Length: 297
Image (tube, rainbow, N blue to C red; front, side, top):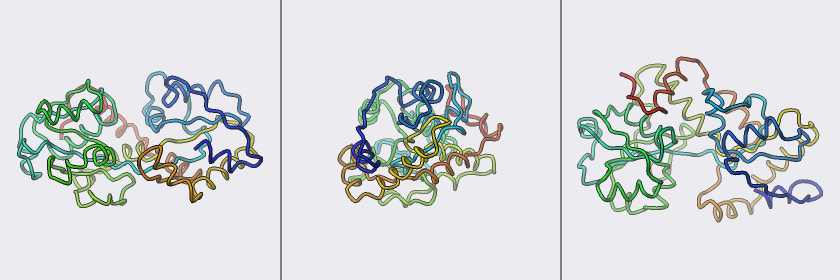
């Protein structure tokens, strides 16, 4: 983003990146909200996790997601899929739901892939699934190939980029997808059943909507509350011009290895404002992000 913001901010000012360990999460969001001067000269490059942490009221959050000034995000398409190793022999949803003790791998308890795996297991009616955390992302892949694990949930772009043969040569069975945003069909995996079709109640539909919204905020660029309106307007316009810049998609692909799917300031604000926040749904989601058993269905 840096070279394009410099290009599209009037006067082409110097843009400096300041690294902060943990700056993409609650630590960085707390810093932007509480410590940064609201002069419009410091932009936070956050991960989408800050929205979920704020909505869920997690420990250590000292910011209010409703008071940040959102400039936009370069990506908001985050399709998740669930797949199993071919040797497991579950190539249909019926076989998947009747196979007991499927081992689903993830990085850590509460990680995006961990929660996604638990959501898929719940909605696809896995029989006594086992959730095994403690891997790096690549270690999960190795464990799948070696038969140490049976399944994982992952970003569609990640699995197809790192292991294209898993789909192209049928080395893994792909079962379902969570579209982020809903209705945006993945070019290769759009034929998979969408997780919402398995929801039985309005509460379950809200649960998916909340999680989808958490993932749909992408990697938001934020300003602290109280930033001057004239500088906010300049930065918003620079962000819009960046996303329309014909050179931006190729540059983004070179850095991130996937296509951009940007949301401008107004679109991102709308996504954040529209996240369901009723206590029943949030309490249910906490059962998926923790180490305990899945809720009964």
